[in-house]
Amino acid sequence: MRGLAIVVCLLLFGATGARAEPQWLTLPPTPTLPAAVKSGYAPVNGIKIWYAEFGHGAPVVLLHGGLANANYWGLLVRALAPHYRVIVMDSRGHGRSSRDGRPFGYDLMAADVLALMDYLKVEKTALIGWSDGAIIGLDIAMHHPDRLTKLFAFAANSDPSAVKNVDKSPVFTAFIARARKEYEQLSPTPKEYDAFLQQIEKMWATQPHWAAAELHTIKVPTWIVDADHDEAIKRDNTLFMADNIPDSGLLIQPQVSHFSFLQDPAQFDGDVLHFLQHVPGK
Image (cartoon, rainbow, N blue to C red):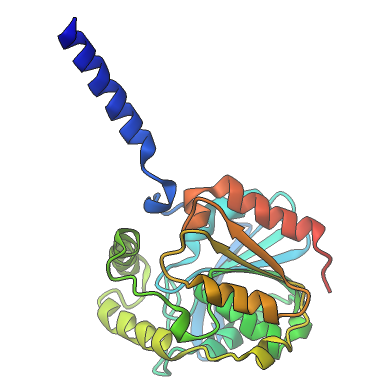
């Protein structure tokens, strides 16, 4: 009987252990995008931006984070496409999009988004951004507010000092390794990942630099959103942005990290749908 008890305890411990790993310490697989209504390459600012469209209705643009690609939005696209015209894109130099010799910068990447909107004849849109995509969204909200109806900014930062050291984060380390493989599979320059990574890291180290006065100019209805276990963004900067963007909402998603939309898609997608359906736009 003692042996049986030990076996049962081991089985229970193993099962509990399998369930016990916090979801914020996981990096679920990169989703795939569903079949697009339309996709292709847009000639934008001297480069080619890959994009895809799904569903019909009011437009919603989804902007991915640094080193990633539009595939990361696969689950959110499926949640939004029954209700909206969802547009995804690979940022310059990311995924399937090309780049030129100009250094990466948020102003330039914001200009790419606006040029793609012009190409697709989208006058105004709601924007959902993750990390670098959220920073690009804030850039547009400051400098081209007439192009946005509302902004959901997840895991943004307003200053490089707000970024944590992620070198010892197993989740972020796994993401960077995955990003290399995906870059090699998707990019028109598959052998240039190291140069690409170096340029992106330089942008992260030097941009953006937005003081309270600049954030205060944002009049687009905005939610500042982050995860309670974000490996990359310091909480005080998230609060600083929410405090200084007039009438903004603040949302801290529980039990998730910088990759919330993969770790708990039901929570993330539900929050985005609530934002789109219940927060009045411009």
